[in-house]
Length: 287
Image 1 (tube, rainbow, N blue to C red):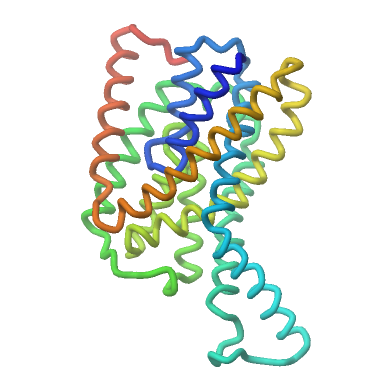
Image 2: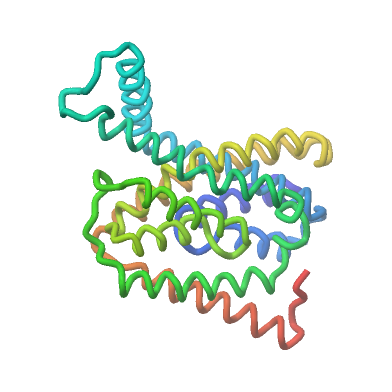
């Protein structure tokens, strides 16, 4: 992989990780166009490493939230362990500490499913354009339904275990290429009655454990899988994805305050439909 190719992959990752249009779909398509000489396992490792850049973007953008959640989580649990009882609001855990637990609970499904199907995720299944295109269309339809039936009145302070599990299981869909982590989790949030901005914000916070775990695991394996010198170019791509990813978070949260996800739904249908047409007409191969 050349430096230019790594930069292009970083730009694509940063643009598509948080916007609900599937980063994996676009990265796999880009790897086809650029004719990257990588095995499916090497491509999986490269994508996971570049995703660490967008994880860093989440840390920077939500630094205040992450700090408050972490401090409240430690403080409230120490208070419980030392027998100091309830906090000033009359509850055992503050809102921030409770949100920390929701992130933990919501991360369990994808951790379990990811480990169980690790070989399939790293193999050719997740590079299959037929799977990618199909999921682009399926999630677009489900997201459209969620926009219609979702009540969209609940803020992040109202989230409970049901929300964590619903969004957590939806995050498992992101293991299927073309689904989109943000698309699947925002969809689940809308079905649960959350506002669009709340669904997106919780989606981004919930991505931290999953992306960190997969990225660091694949980084370790990338040291053995990728050709010598690849990690240097990947590091550049990772930095680029972080910068673009930060801007993407900023854009999407503000966009969803006053707009629906219709433009992303339309884009998914167009791209997914176009890939399916080319596949069935023989102009593209699935693998």
